[in-house]
Amino acid sequence: MPNPILLIHGVGSGFKNDTKVKNILDTDREVLLYDYSCVLESSKWQYLFPEFLIKRLSIIQQYEDYTEDVFSYFLDPTIRQRAVTNLYQHLQDMKNGSVTIIAHSLGSVLVWDLLQNKKFNTKELPIDNIIFTGSPLYLNIVWFLSTRKKVPFHITSIKGGQDPICFYGKRTRPFDIEVFGESIKHEPHGYLAHLNLANDRLNIF
Image (cartoon, rainbow, N blue to C red; front, side):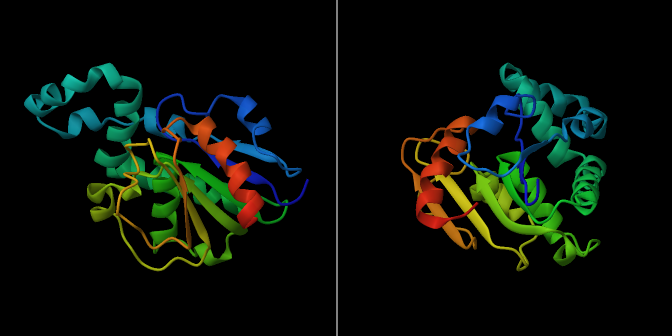
């Protein structure tokens, strides 16, 4: 089926292993899942920092499913580059028409990093639209650590009114459209359901 939708998960369980999410979107297009968790799991970020710092970070072990992915991506530059490279190669290999990317949470940072990477000619990738949901790019620290050149693709960002990750207050980013969902928390399924409502108005996928 041509022109698929590619879902890219965030941290933790997200929707990376949940094929049911493919049925949430009200679309006739094929919905595919992209899983980069195996790259994050190969990280050795713990060996990059002194033991006292690792112990300090251990105070948030109750969120281990999430922090392991976050630390792997942001603290291990080799893993970050490998994740970006793998996504680029995956998109290059897609032969069934242009793709709409829906990237949740950390997945949106991965896509943003790819678009900012000078190593790759992203203009040639078969992308017709990009949608971010619950993006931590709204967090000042993440934005500060990110490259911010103009990208060659249209980006729509969905911000949740009850999602602390994307800080829905006055912070704005240079995305083409920002859609506000007052009742959305960080849970990805809620974002996907809201996308159906936004799509009725904006025709974003």
